[in-house]
Picture 1 (cartoon, rainbow, N blue to C red):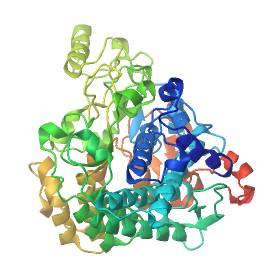
Picture 2: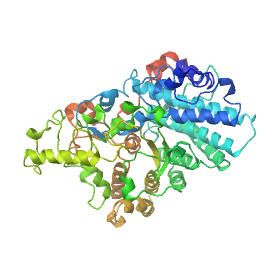
Picture 3: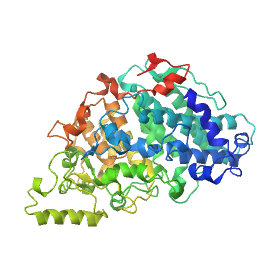
Picture 4: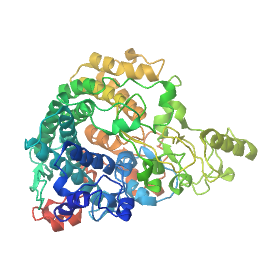
Length: 549
């Protein structure tokens, strides 16, 4: 942070819109204004905020010096949570953007890896610009307006979001460690050079700051202007529901169950559950009724072969997907009742057309599915899947492949939105929080709207003990939020390891997954904690090698 962050703000602000060269604008598609003018007006502060919005999904080299085109920020960080925990399963050997290396636990466990370095600097980039806005607005030099309060609310929410991400990745899980003494991450409040930070604060201190920021965000939003109405782009702007949603996540991760339940209810107000057709549409747009917050990816800043959908969606026309269709854990898919329409987006009987498949069963010559008795039947099934889902000729198919995440224009490299928060998550949080308070009936009632909306035969009476319901709730989390990046934080909160071999197997290849095929639970394995970038330790005078996780 110390070496790079002192340049981040300058890069973001130093060149004004009127004096920018066209080349810079082509390379750096953000709203940039001069440093001296950044806090001069409410309008300029909104431009800074818009830059943070776009920085969530832009290529990292456009956000800070030393960034890299191989990571487009949340396009990578969101699905990473399911990639490293084995929910989003690779069916073949492909390592574009180090996606296989991350799956094999060879990225977040290495202090020199691009993944840990860019995640660290991206989150501190958000904090730096949030500090700029918070410090500028709270100085009292501008007249308070509802619009200015909304900017302030977004800045506090962004800072809380970034610190929660940092402490959950670079610190030990709150519920499985000793937060009062476990090292967290450095706190940074400066918005002026030299941007020095404190040494690593404890996990508890970081969580306390997050809580303060979220409370301040909610207060500011209560006195602010409403989020603009409109299309998918409106939900790129943060609002009070986003702040409550983050408060629900924060409280759940620290065991503040009542706060988590209460905040989850407030977060989902005004965001009705999806219909069956909308749930199956592909999760490519913020326009979905459940979406509380997401990045609206504009054409001028698309990342193409660095996108979320390139890494995770089987309709994307890129080699990472064509050669390596992503599959779901067959233990999860096989457990989905026939009455639950979410099962329709997984294809357990898809032919394995990939002769390079990791399981060695690719191609008609290696077919093991008794549904296909002739090569013509095998080929016809492949053709039908390609036709139905818009795949191109080079796309491979594989048993248990998914079509939950689908592009607006399948078979292309077109950009799509990144969804960060849905109301479904809030039902799951409320149900889990109530269960943790030993309120089994309350937990069932909290889950009921979501469960009944998805499964026409769902019956709360099927679960008679807290243990039974907790296992079912975990199933609901894994199914509803599959592919949306919650695997990592769920595993840590539940203190669960990874075992692709258990209970009949997940469908992952041990040869491909290597040491990540079976991983001990987080309380017993410090490799769940991301390494601090070596570049940060070498440059920051407040950190040393003894601070490494």
